[in-house]
Image (tube, rainbow, N blue to C red):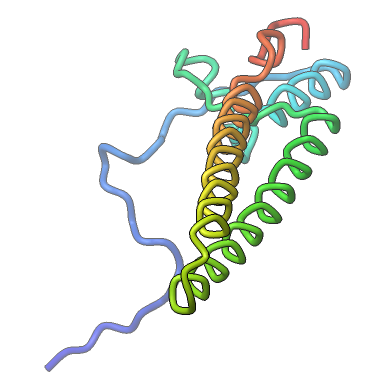
Length: 149
């Protein structure tokens, strides 16, 4: 029985997947900095993949462009949402206690109204977070790799 020794390293690629053509491109220092700056706006890790994608006109996935103001707003909205959810949990606990004790119908109606209000506020915050996240992911038109960047 013959055993093969594992030499490590990456597995061998098939002939169809192997890149065997090489192209050399030279840049000035300023051109390379501009190229690297544009590459930094995408999720592409290395320069070779970035150039290959750009030359073959594949759509490039862009990193979301966020302003610090949007990040602060999203953080505050998320924090507020968590606070409201905690209030909602407390309201539900109070409602259970009311239902298990005596007949406090007015208090029960008020508690249910509070619970509905908290749910409504939570729904509004969900919508706001979704809208802010969507606008954050789309970025501005100039952030999608225009030639002047």
